Length: 93
Image (cartoon, rainbow, N blue to C red; front, side):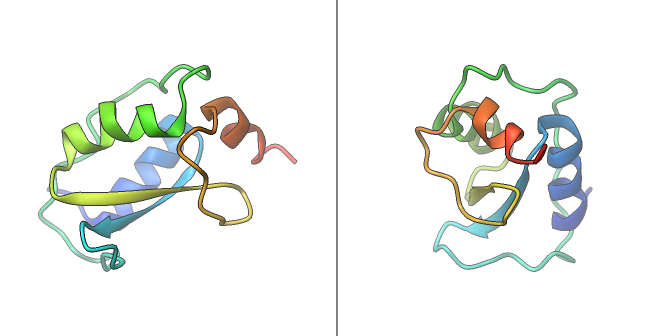
């Protein structure tokens, strides 16, 4: 079982962007919370997909009962219609 911190790092390594895992109430989950399954994906979702699609198809499937914010390179929350390519490109600047 993984900690929130290790899941957030794994998502960055696989998907190419930072995230903040939240309770479904919107409160931040402590990074040392453990007992969650590891991030099950080894390949990034296609660049043409948007943030909402990634959340619904990958995150909610793996972590029901939790919410998530996808962050750009400046640490700002990204809108759901933003393409993953745009989010990933923000880390290149």
